[in-house]
Length: 487
Ligand SMILES: Cc1ncc(COP(=O)(O)O)c(C=O)c1O
Image (tube, rainbow, N blue to C red; front, side, top):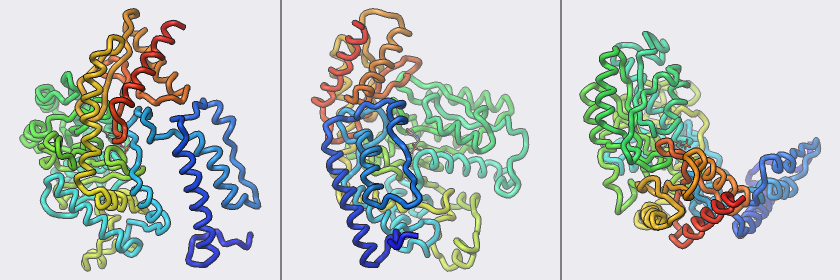
């Protein structure tokens, strides 16, 4: 074994090695941040060819390992902060979030039990209390930080399922699923996130359990179709364990009519989970908070901070309106969250989470809120929503471009629309525009479908991007479209 101790600790050698490694890494990041290109434009094959793993028995040492990471990872990374990087709900990060990561990583607290993360546990609990207040829930600490929207949606669906069976006197936790499972349904809109399907499959109920409700011209759940389908389900002897409403669909940013959905659900005692992974950013908004009216009525809520809260990946939360439902996932492990601890009121957060070992991601949100203050945070969130409206107006005025849907949050759906070609031709052309821009390294524009129409998507999260930047991008889209047509 090498005589150099590789572990981070308080020894003088370890501290020196830590400082060297961090300094070398941050210097590389600073250089990378100044690269003008959004991406170096390498293909899948080129990267497979270029990247090789070099695991020698002697080890390369920290310095060389970092140099190799810079060469093979950093240089060919996508610049998510670049103004032309607008394909996904993938945000540039706050500087303070980076500082928080240094603290999170160096301390390596684990959120499963209080004795592994004393101050961190209390900070997370206080943030959950604060988030509940923002949503409009009663005071309490029912909720937990998660790895993101997919996991938060899983928690909502799982607790909805188990509450549904519990009402019939059956414990899924103890005895597993029972009865005619093909009759058990979850409702969500056609534009809900695919994690609903994946989670239902994971929960043993399959994709077949998901009934899709039609959407209106703005991709929002059509409440009259929901009412019809609920009535139909009843007539078919089906049982609906949850309705998943979305506050901010992934492409259109559509917010389902929350209050009306809850009103329908209440009549039938159906759990409503709101996936506010994206739209939850409006909790901080000064201009658009009212878009979320009705969120406080939901039984559970998904929030994601690695979207329009500008936190590094990962950082999400799950909120549960009625704390009693946490009993449905109660499990006491003697070494982590014993009854003895519970009686003493020790907050071992493993009791509220699907994860055991868990990062202290809550610190990023805490530091973000403290550093920016609510006003600046609101401004950077509102910026994207307002910019999308301006971009939509500009797109509508361009003869070669067509606005596919009026923006609702910070995304713009549009397509290059030449005067020639049928639907399939235009769809392929737009797909090729997206691919060509990424291959050139110039821009990352989303390619998606809205109501069966293949279109391009700009997700305008980045608060330092302005209309002039987007005009540059739209000019590239048009030029690329013309080139492809001429080729
Ligand atoms: C509406 C919505 N819900 C859930 C998710 C999944 O979130 P995550 O990627 O954090 O798991 C996404 C991801 O984009 C989303 O847009």
